[in-house]
Image 1: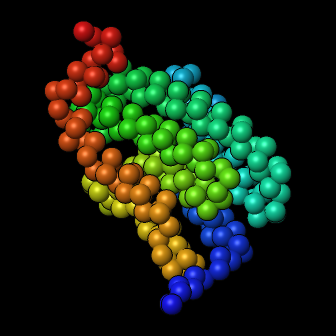
Image 2: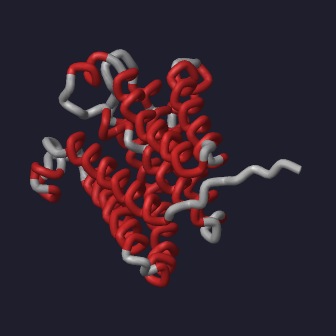
Length: 240
């Protein structure tokens, strides 16, 4: 009877790979928000209102926590990692609330990217929060399955990188949303490639969670252009 021999997982590879992915995520966000936020003095940054300042601070806290948690795994401090994980789940819930409020505030101010009206663009941050919330909830449920947990956390974070990537000062990003999408999906490709290298297959979480992110992001703009979604946007503004 033939048996399949799987390559044993090298934890050192995991520590190196997920640390590098965290660094790439930090660099992505710093490049996107450097001019308007991080290098503008944070508190003194010319943001529209206090809500957006709080929103920026909380989302930045998530990146700091992600970095700390990755470092604790590398240092084999699983005890501290688990304790902070509970605070991380609470922080993620706060992010979803503030992200939704910030999306409504942007709609109220008529904010949109070129080529879209504000009601259509409203679907982008809303779906970002939905995808993030779903993946973080599943990551919490899978907290005793380290392979699934770390992939869900990583993909959930990648799913909300579009706001930072869209602000990159590069022509291929500015011309079309496809450029930002491709940068976002490059993270997912790297994770799939790492799975193939270490597991000789793509982990089921990598496969379906990445597909979830891509499908939502590719179908949300057509949905956002419909009258039904514009009615949702009007309801969000209190217009009946």
